[in-house]
Image (cartoon, rainbow, N blue to C red; front, side):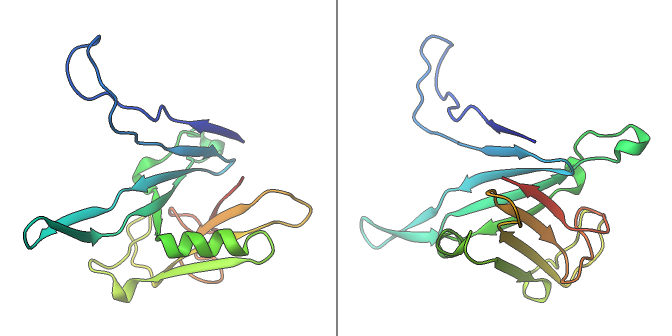
Length: 167
């Protein structure tokens, strides 16, 4: 298992010597045995109201992205970006996770009946729910993030078990 932090600064502006860095796009990645877990911020968007006023149009989120590995038994251990599964956490949900883990297990879900278009798994099948579970495994000081498409283990990313990575 490995941890990587992508270069958070992307240049904007002129030539190679005159580049300015005014925006940061941080991304945190954890390489697990069965998948890659990445955390990426989605900044809020704003809209103008009245004369000179602005309001939040869409609040920001933290995107958790699970990218499964191919099957190592047939020689395809590369990541399958076509089968990745996402779960975006609101500020309130992130606060809940930080206040509860590691003492308590946290389970957050998205119901596909509320989503338009409906949720599909990495294999393109319709799913009833997307469930993110965050807990501290027994005999570990880490934190386990797992994503499933139903309670009881329908699997994520076209697999028969949840995608999981331990931090």
